[in-house]
Image 1 (cartoon, helix red, strand yellow):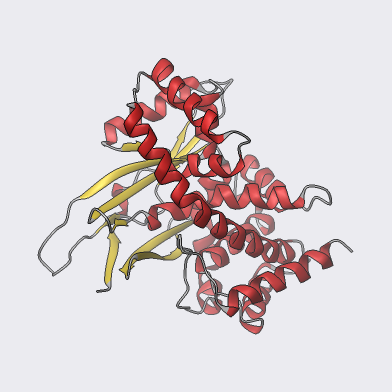
Image 2 (spheres, rainbow, N blue to C red):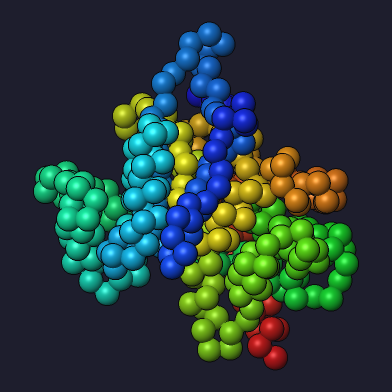
Length: 340
C-alpha cells in the first residue's frame, strides 16, 4: 500500500559545516529533507524512526588516510549529540566500485576506526556489513551512470550563452521533446548550477569555483569527471532510498556528511518535501529549499517548466524503460557536440 510521508518542522533540521582547523578541509553536513518526517500511517499512530548520519567516500578517505582528524572528531561529536547512528554504507559502496582492492581498503578503514576513533566493529558485523555493500553496489552503479548522462545535458545548457530563465526553459523543453525521464532532482540541480553561474555574487567564491570545476569539460578526463560529480551527488539521494527498510519494517531519518562543497550547496538549495513508500521502493518528491538563493530568485520559473513524472527519482533498482535509452542517446549526442 502506498504511503506518503510529509516532512515538517524545518526549523529542527541542522545544516552547516565543521571547520575547526585551518589546515584541514571543512566537512559539510545537513539533511536533504525539508524537515522531520511525519510518520503517521493511519492518522493517529506514530512510528519511530532510526536517526542516521550517512558518510560519503570523501569522509571515508579522510579516515583511511588519517587526514582531517580534528574535523572528523568534531563531526562524530556532533553526531553523538544529535543521537545519530553513523553509517558509511554509501561511501563504502562507492569504494567497492572504484578502489583497486576494496576488501583491503575496507579492512584498513575498520582498523583505523578502532585505532584513531576508538570505534570497534566486531569481525562478524564487519563481514555482514561488507555483504550488504556488495549486494547494493551494482544497482548504485547503474543509478550513478544514469545521473552521469543527465549531467551531460546540464553541462550543455550551463555553457550556453543564454539568460538564466531561457536556459531553464530550453532545458525543460529538450527533456520533454526527447522523451527522457523527468528526474526532478536532476532538473533542479541543473537550475541551481545555472543560477550559480548567472548570479555568482549570491554564493561564496569557493562554491562558484567548485561549480565551475564540476561543470568544466575535459577532453581527456571527461568520463572520470562526470563519474566523480555524479558519485558525490548520489549521496543526496541515499536518505530517500534508505527511508524505509522493508526487510526490518523500520523507518530511517538521515543526515549526510561530505567533504565536497557541492553536496553542501545541494543541501542548501534543494530538499525533499515528501517521501512516497510504495511497492518495495521509496521515492522523494524534491523541490527548491525555501531558504535557498535559487528558490528566492527563480522558483516561479522552475515551477512553470518542471512537469511531474512517474519517475521522479532514482531507486536502487535503476531504470530500464525506453526513456532511459532516450536519455543515453541524448547524452551521447550532446557529448559528441561538445567535443567538436
